[in-house]
Image (tube, rainbow, N blue to C red; front, side, top):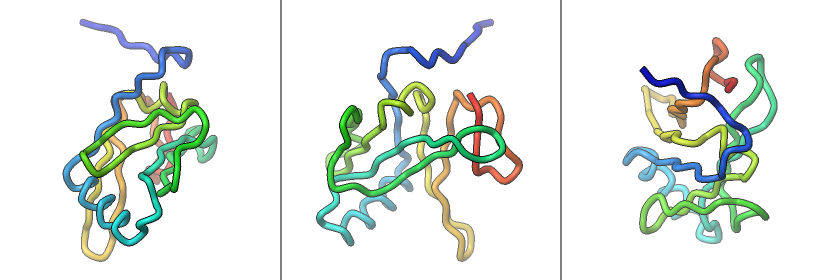
Length: 121
């Protein structure tokens, strides 16, 4: 048996990945917005569980961002503050009927709110 703990001061090596469906979605968005350099993942305090994911298409990295080459043509920027909380996260994209959503499979998330909008570590 192993025990894993969350250390907010751990070195910033987020090891975030994207599924093929997520990469396809991001590529489509980047094709529509040629001035965008990639997608940025951050975390904000919000919701009933404490934090929520904040993902946006950006023209450039912000100071301190960690750049991950998710594919040859897709760069994922991770905010330095979010890196310990999203380490090991897999970003997925799913479509059900008319609804589509980006999903975060985060091994650090210990609690999720009922609506799925926020998490705690």
